[in-house]
Length: 377
Ligand SMILES: Nc1ncnc2c1ncn2[C@@H]1O[C@H](COP(=O)(O)OP(=O)(O)OP(=O)(O)O)[C@@H](O)[C@H]1O
Ligand code: SF4
Ligand SMILES: [Mg+2]
Image (tube, rainbow, N blue to C red; front, side, top):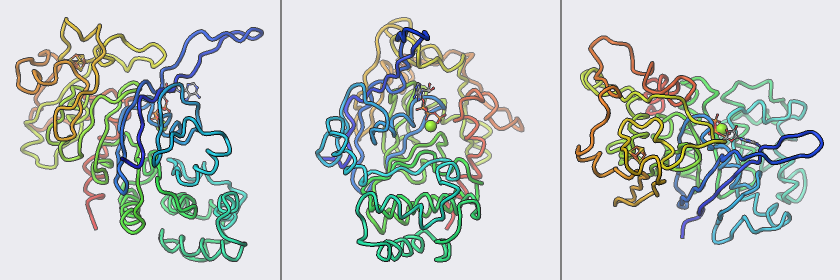
């Protein structure tokens, strides 16, 4: 059994209208049937465009939002069924690190008080002396000086504040840490340090991570398994190397084609995939395959009417596309207008591969730098 298992998790937010009579007029299908497993001591990377439901999924695991349907099982216990008090106790084992460390740290509390607060709430440490000793130990682990204790969040740099965010999770001795865009707000050079720190901590403490990002480059380096999300559900999942070597879902291929390759010869000749149209609204998702409105391989049969299941194609590789096999062997090709080889000297492919608002495309722009930096040390 995996440490953390999600089975058919849905989070639908009601859309209400009316001042006097609060009527539900629809739903935002933020998370719409996600099943995945995170193994103990491993990292699961979850990627996808802005608004595809990544944060909502993370919050659902912690039950910070109501789970509409499905199960979240931690170490054999279905969290969706726990009472408030039971969930409060389990929550210590599941911690979250946020994208914006400053926004998530109370500016009026010093670091000791921020870190001690959660410890006291969960009964960690007999008294403030014991808690202080523990906090000092954890601050050292995350690479902060002991005198950080009496200082305030604004006195630290972005990277240091993210270390404080990580320390705040660590003092509670969690099993699983959900890192929601842990480095997106940081400079590329600092991103590498924080990613490396997360890896070191995983090794020394045996932590399990669910890392959420829109940046494929960041996720690749630290993930054992990667799941690609589109409009509330997984479209593909595979061990990290497999996903990069053989992306099988058209959406994954489009994302991948937006990530520049370090080798200039390969870079100049490789194909890029142009996605047409905007990301549909999760309040009104397309019928059938949710990607059909933008898919260059879309077929007249099935795609618009039948929602593809995530199917195992071997080796822990799962793909939600009716035509994954035909696309892989070339029986079905993309629409001509959807692909273009890059001519030598042309601009980097970030421009058109994925719309700018998509986040993934924009992030891919930082790709080579991020990857280089992340790979260091
Ligand atoms: N409390 C809420 N009520 C209604 N809709 C919500 C709520 N929280 C999120 N949503 C909607 O659910 C969808 C998924 O949002 P979510 O924040 O999970 O996406 P995300 O993948 O984390 O995006 P980003 O990369 O921008 O952080 C969005 O359309 C968002 O507007
Ligand atoms: S099912 Fe059809 S629309 Fe969906 S990804 Fe596959 S080919 Fe494209
Ligand atoms: Mg988010």
